[in-house]
Image (cartoon, rainbow, N blue to C red; front, side, top):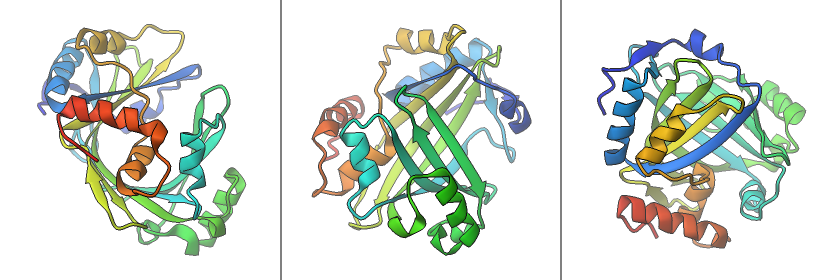
Length: 253
């Protein structure tokens, strides 16, 4: 992907983007379509986050869940208030965090995170401070959880000229189910998430519409579990998986 035409935005500038009335939208497309989206975005003045000299960044995440996959099933069963717990490592820098994502019954997502040593990335449960942080920000304790799914991907982050929206673009998505030992991927697939100020117009939404990219609410964690655990309840996600397969012209299951 050619990102040379994008101006750059720094982490400090990105942190200044406060979306107080934030609305999140997710989309799924393929790498060929993404080329056109990126060209349109660059021409519209979007800038790309650059860190450590690169406009793409590698991410590695470990999701934690209960033995019965409570967090996965809450999502599958359409529970409005739900959580996800993960560790995440930014591969270029080695910075590692414990993150708790909470969704309320209004569809708004809030994320809390705390830094942890890179050595605790695979399993933070031996870190007393991290366990205390989890207990203070989650319904779950560390004793209730264990590693469930690893996800790896490459990310591009864009911001619009008015600094009223952020776009994350994830490609090269791979899954490793820690419990079943099964692996899966989304070859040629791209997950786009638009985080915008609900009071401001979104040029990216128009770009996606012009490129015939439709919204698809997709959780990488849930799709990864559905693809790698043949015993799990997955009926609600099968239609989404079929839509993904159609987009990338690849049979996944």
